[in-house]
Image 1: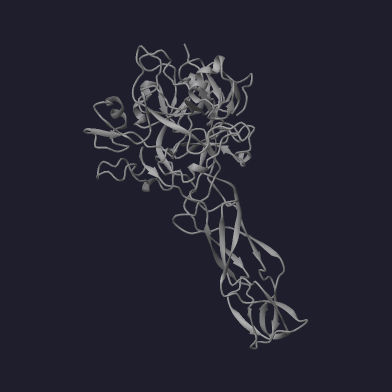
Image 2 (image 1 turned 60 degrees about the horizontal axis):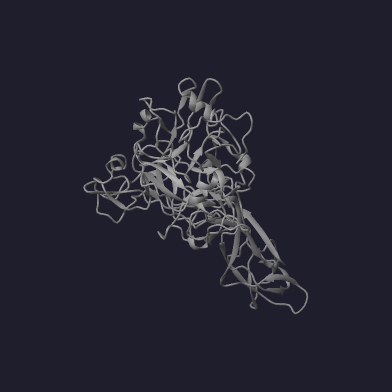
Length: 534
């Protein structure tokens, strides 16, 4: 995440600065009077929303001084800008979301999904690959496969796979704060149903409910039920369910964009409940989706031992069982892979806002330790918000309230603790034993030297992984793999070398592909609240 430059505007101080993006579990069309808009990429005149234009400019498209576009997060996953890290290997090829928008490592830029085989345990099953040689008399009747020393790396494009690469996810709407006051000229507040990523231990503000999939009585949470309804499960009388984002990533509802190719087959969040109580399916907020693996856009490589590349002719006579030469290709199926497909990520806990702040509340209403994304280059007030860049801070003074919330989750000891580092990463809900993160126990601390949480805990990190596709197995065409056998006499000395026929198969490692595995995504700058506004 880049440092603040002198020419970058600073947003006016507020509990939630204009330009902040939150997830939302309700109908966003009702939020405009409250000062919030759906992140749908729509265009607006600068004079219509001057505060928002000051915050995000034309990062998401537009014409400077005339019009600008809202970010379009429909069908997208959010990713932190990479900054000085190397976590986004394709950062230089990121493109603008709309004409006039940001490119490369800037908020608002987009990139498509990708699939990497590097270190992902994929193998090709090669039938009849020679493993020993024989020497034969040269003749002109039978074309045999010449024995090759060493290895040969075969590169080609993969076929098969799913429609995209993505992690396990749940649909939400992404909304952006458009003005500092609502239609009644009151300060714009966190809307009921807004969903916050929290980087701390436990959020103690009782307005916020953990997104753990629990049921609640509609009568005890009437405002939240009015927003969520039965989208996340329940019958509404007497109970409803809050979202269950444990182990999941959040994805914007695709709507009519086509950014989610499997939007219509998304499933219900509570599938074990009676019919009609399972929650939303298809292209609706609340629906969920399992991970998938699309074919890499770049070639993969298979390394073969003794793959024939030439031939010699010899007499067909009973003797040694050898390989006939072929110049044709063979379809080699790929197997293996990891337990899931996912991008590099960091754990957070998700909380949903259950109602407005009390009139007697002592804080500004936005929890310390909670995080927002910004789709523009202006930054929120530095006296309350810090970039999620992994910087070390003193446990006392201005950052003491934040340390009380997050401790050493992101590393540190003694009187120094570290902020979360979301640069180049995606946010994932901490699994908390839900079983959606198959590698939860192997998650790593964010800083090798300075520690931090590991395993199934907030703050732990995880590298990308590539699982085998669910709909159609990967395969690749390989030339010269033996398909048929023959016989020939064996010489004692001299002659030319031919490969012995192998009745079985041999697994060969597959690598390369794209530089990382990731879903379709759009860049934001992440900031964490470390102090309350007056």
